[in-house]
Image (cartoon, rainbow over all chains, first blue to last red; front, side):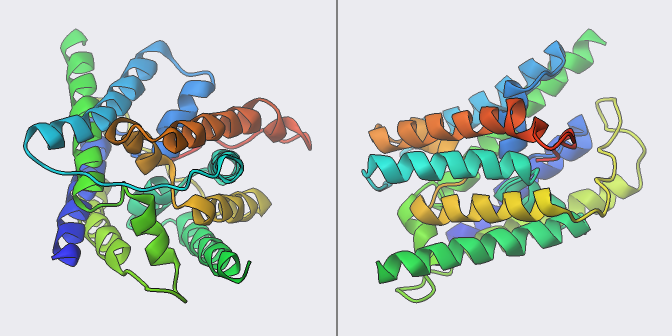
Length: 135
Length: 154
C-alpha cells in the first residue's frame, strides 16, 4: 500500500509542478520559491510566492479536515537540527535547487545541471546516514 | 491584466496545496520515512523512489507540452533554459544540501509542510536555521569570490 500512496502522492506533486509551469511559467522548486522571498523580487511575484507557500501550509489542515491522519517523528537534538537546517539552506541556494527544483522539475526537463545535482545530493545524503550508523 | 494576476495567484495557492497534499499522502512529510530511504544499510524503505517516479512522470508530460509553447497560459514567458554549466557551486551546494538532508531527513518542501502538520519544536528550529542559511548564502557567502550567484530555478 505504501508504494501506491507514494505513487499517488508523487503524481499530485508532479501535477502541481506541471500546473505552475504551464499556467504561471514558474519552476516549482521549494527552495527557490522560499529563498526568493529573502532576495529582492518584484512585488507581484512576492504575493504569488506567498500564495504558493500558504497552500503548502494549508495542506495538512485540509488533509486532517478530510479525516486523514498524519504521524511524523523528528529528532529532538537541537544542535543537529540547526546544523542540518543551515546546510540545507546554504546548499540549496548555492546549488540552485533541492529535491523539487532539481528532482521533480529539472530531471524531467532533461537539464544537465539537475542530472548532476540530484545524484550528488543523493550520494552525500546516503553517505551521511551511513556514517551516522558508525558513530 | 488584473484578472490574469488574480488567476496566477489562485493557481499558486492551489498548486501549493496539491504539492503539500502530495507530500502528506506519500508520507514524505515524515523525516523518519525519508531517512529510512537514505538508510541503505538499515531497514531500507523504497517509498521515496515511487514518489519521485510518480512526480517525475507527470512533470515530464508538463515539460513536453511546454516545449511546444512560447508563453505560459496565463501570460508571461516560460522558464528559460538554465544552461548546461556544471560548476563548483552546483556540485558543492548540492553536496552540502545532501549532508544536511541526511542528518535529519528534512528537505525544503517537507520542512514547510511539517511546520503546520506537527507542533514538534524540532521542525520550527530546522526551518529557522534553513531560512538563516538561505539568507546567509544570498546576502553574504554568494558575494565572496567576486561572482554573483546565478538566478535560482528551484
